[in-house]
Amino acid sequence: MKNLFIFIIVGLAACSQKQNEENPPQRPNVLLIVADDLGFSDIGPFGGNIHTPVLDQFSKQGMLFSNFYVLPTCSPTRSALLTGNDNHVAGVGIMSEVKYPAVANLPGYSGHLNDQVVTLPEILREHGYHTYMAGKWHLGDDEGQIPSDRGFEESFTLLQGGGSHYADQKPLSPPQVMDYRVNGKKVPLLPADFYSTKNYTDTLIHYIDKNKGDERPFFVYASYTAPHDPLQAPQEYIEKYKGKFDMGWDSLRTLRLTNLKTLGIISAEVNSFAPSGIPQWSTLSAEEKVEFARDMEVYAAMIEYLDMSIGRLLDYLKQQGLYDNTLIVFMSDNGANGVMATTYPGNGDGKYLGAFNNELDNRGLPNSFIEMGPGWAQASSSPFRLFKSFASEGGIKAPLMIKPPNDTLSHGQWNRSFLHVTDLMPTILQLAEATYPTKFKDKTVRQPIGKSLLPVLTGTAQEIHSANEGMGWELFERKAFIRGKWKILRLPAPFSTGQWQLFDLEKDPGEMTDISSAFPAIRDSLINDWLQYAKANDVFDHRGHYDSLFINSLVKDH
Image (tube, rainbow, N blue to C red):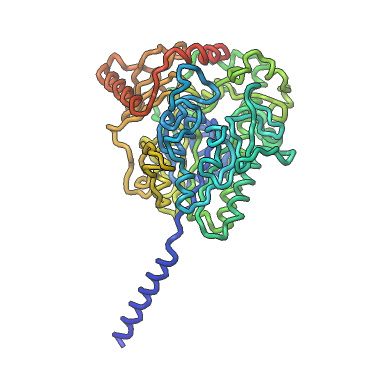
């Protein structure tokens, strides 16, 4: 009898092993959600006072990262996100909207993804994944550069960086267009009540649903254009925030700082950066206060609608039994957008913007064009310095939340170690059991510089980058390098001195006190690190070009 029992147990084990070999564990799905120009403290889990119940609940199911870095603007971040490489290596050392002759023939400054890198969907598709995308591309709009050419099986995309969220397709400025494509083919926007966040979400659910029965894993890139300007939202969402920002941006900046201190993200001793170019709220006229408050109401409405739409995606996954085995990442691509719409190429004379109806009762509705402006953007970046387009903390530090597949960590815990956007691609590839190739389409490709976050997500490590490792930045002649708690930053005049400055980010995350004179050796060492970074990543030192082409117009409008 004993021998018979052993025989049965061994037989069952062999049968189970054979079954596992025939039906290996399902590789995880991936849902990568990117908000566009969302400030560090805008959502509830990061100290925001905007209603984000979906993200609030989501934050309790995964890990939150308080020290996550991106690039200063949209397309550079997206190039690093999808390739695991520095934006210059990927070809986006410059945005396509801001070109100039000095770098016209350099591969790192083409303004679109080049063939030195392979994209995440290209790799995952070769490893059996469905690859879906809806939303903003902003990584090239010519033949061979669009999503259907760079690995996406199904895509509904805006090729450019932004524009109207409604069906009228009014671009950010006259030289630009809004080119929507479905799997590479140009399409009109339907239905007539099109709203970007709603229709991107509808499309992604449709893509997943139509192939859900084949048991192949999927990679979904939910590349939303909210809350990028022009600020526009459904009226019923705008009305929810009526009067909520009458306090003004100075009070909001203080409130956000207080909330971050309560969360333990910021030390109790830290003060908030307040740029001298932003007027105090109390000095504005009554009419200005009403209009500016309305603009922030629309911004908040966009974020709450985005939160609701993310909830639709998550609910669909739960209903289909797909949620548990899905890696879900939520992030913003850069800091809040304080750049005025008049700085977009072609908008300087005011003619294009003057044709919109920005009367109070139409702000945020069709045929309006309003923006956040530097006052609110600095509040959304509190306590960090400045906002989108700068290599200061307010431009390159972003919220990040990750839910790993199959409940592999304690819920709602914070991680405060240094992370970079290039770390996400190696993480996803490792979970998908895929590898970055040395050659792609018979061409040698550059290898990713990021590291997999999996040890942190599974609780086997607290960090993946040591204090001796560093990371560099360069965009619009604004440079930075971070190693451990030390950061050097060079911002051209009039935003700063035009010289390298040194900051201790642990004591001074707002970069308010330059300590170069106290630690000259550390400053010089980090400058040398930046030079090595520039050499390794095809960075061209083009000092002076942006000062005349971009910065002067930005200063004038601030």
